[in-house]
Length: 454
Image 1 (tube, rainbow, N blue to C red):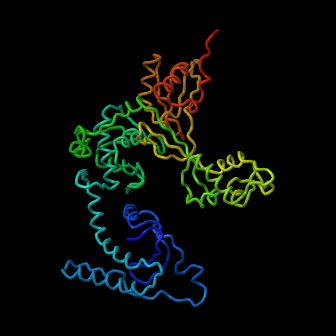
Image 2: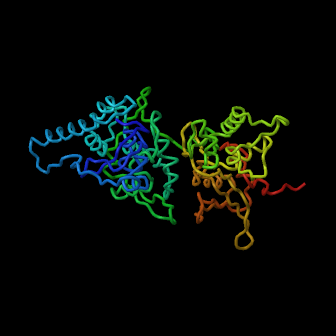
Image 3: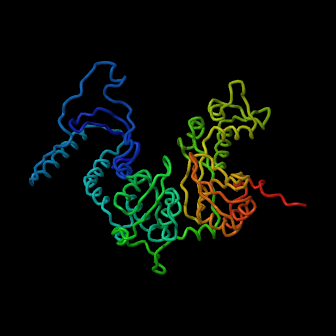
């Protein structure tokens, strides 16, 4: 079995002679879990590149196919394949590697013969997870999908945005000891998975606009849904771990985490501390990295301890022009923040309702507009980004202020817009801060409330 960073050679299926060399981008397990998708080798040199044009030009020798294929189903076929494997092992034994890990890699590589059998088992639609503690991402995805349909989705009015269905129903339906990550499955995207479920007839979807879909119908009489059994049960009381996201929103405040992502500009600074590009770190980690780097490299100005001398790494990380050679501590850290990307994550009741999302978390925007006849309406945006069920929130506003509500889909918007009749900024702000416990720093537009007359 290969580990990430191991040296490997690449050959064609029709010729054992290598045509490229490089290092593995993933381990053998990660390659298998990627289901044949993505980059597996970081190529350092290949036949036909600029390096191969220097010196004597040699052609690739013809050593025969890497594996002998036989279309017949005779009993001798497994013996031929073993002979081919022994031939390859004999050729590899001639290679001298200084790492001292050759025998271990060869002995472990023999265990990879059964990958095809494992792949066949992973494709079966079987939700019986009691026999093994490991469950492949595809099975876990289908398990959470069917469990959400049979539990929390029965209380939700359709249509429902597919993004909300995944965040508010599928992820909370995931067992506590598992982590649902659609990128680790063979589908890679939620739309690809839902398209397959549409083909099976379990659900129907409709496109509201480009890139935005909603679930319009659920066939509860479908065989797959009727025969679904929840094998992840609560061992204490024997009941199924059903999740009610409405109650979760009511009882606990969302935990909001804003992070900064490592970009190319700050990568030389963070590389010394084992961070890679696109890694997400908190603001405290950024300050610690900057402080440690300045102390280790003795970059504090000896004449003024409040200033830091900029070396090439700090100059790239801050984006300072060539004429600036020093920066105060506070400006230094602020400049590094501006050169980094933004990401955020929202957790509801201990469950990650939203995965790490690129960009800066926009606040819930509350403003007052006018419609025909100079009638005032309250417009609320970005509720879904905080894991709030907009349909349920609209119903609460209807009952709370006795006003009509409308949910609008805006083009190029990350979430839908809630429209409430009249100026209801005070009520909306009160329910968001008291019931949903959203911090006021994430609310924008509270000053638009009706001013009390003196």
